[in-house]
Amino acid sequence: MDKRSIYEQIVEAVRQELLGGRLRPGDALPSVREMAARWQCTPGTVQQAYKELARQGIAISRPGRGTHIGSAVLTAGEDTPLRRASMVHLAEAFLLEMLSAGYTIEETEGAFRAALDRWRALSGETTAVVSAAEAADLEAIPAAAYAASRLRFSGSHDPAVSLLAARFPDVCQGCTLHVAYPGSLGGLIALAEGKADIAGCHLWDAESDTYNVPFVRRLLPQTRVALVTLAHRRLGLMTPPGNPAGVREVRDLARRGVRFVNRQRGAGTRVWLDAQLRLAGLAAEDIAGYDSEVTTHAEIARAIVEGRANSGLGIETAAIPYGLGFVRLIVEPYHLAISERSWALEPVQRLIGWVASDDGRAAIAALGGYETGESGKTEWIED
Image 1 (cartoon, rainbow, N blue to C red):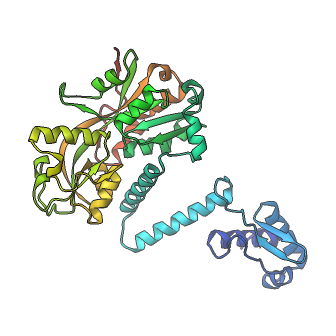
Image 2: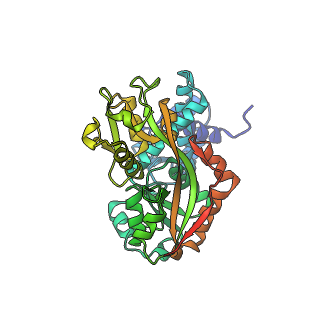
């Protein structure tokens, strides 16, 4: 038996109808008389319930016009318990739909994570929504002042970075991590120009057969920079299930019937590919689709799923949620480049601490396609 008073039960019933989608902002609630008849209570009890709904910001009562659900009750950006509860309800409805369709919880989680990562990459930032004007202003703010509570990341697209950005407010309470994905070279340039606090890169240098160090020395001369290993990730060729075109190596991309999708110029994946093509004696025009460019690994996977390509160079993590085939070619380090001027900042240290922690390593490894044995390892590059 419900021990709450009648007016409290009415309030909760309205809340549940709103959360369940049966009531929407702007909808009219029953008149006091109708609600009293429905609940077999006095009009005064209903009036008390409507006053409580108004106090909570859920309903608005106007003389002669009745009581309506407030139009701003679920306004984006307003952190209210009702808005959070509504999100949970929608998420549970989505989960139920996926489970009813035969997908497992693990499959649903992977698909949702991939979709979130793609939208974060397309929006150019994560964890905090900024306007175009605010985004432009961020570049003008000195790194030390800005990074007191908010860090700027710029670099190569990687799902582990998106995960790190999502976890960052918990890792460093009250902090946010703004993420932009211009590619590895773009990230290091932003770091050199003071427009980023952290750059994400995985640039392979053919001459030295090393990653990132030569590029840091060229782009940030006379600057002491730390390279922190986020993880080692498996890079290879994504294909449709069963790999019908039979691509096994870079040389196969020039075969008839192979349709390739490429990363944008400046991306570390593109740099590595171009070096491998030179070693194989192949030119860009030998590969159908070489000029078809996308900005993230998730977009490569999507192009293959949609049949616009049957091969693409990317990381295994992006192939897993889509159930694609994957031919591993190398395991490469993904580094976070941090200049000495930002190194001592508390948000930076908290970020690095999480990457090196057991919890951080486990969370990154759970994405699939990563090796985290050296996550958090730091190497200082000096001129």
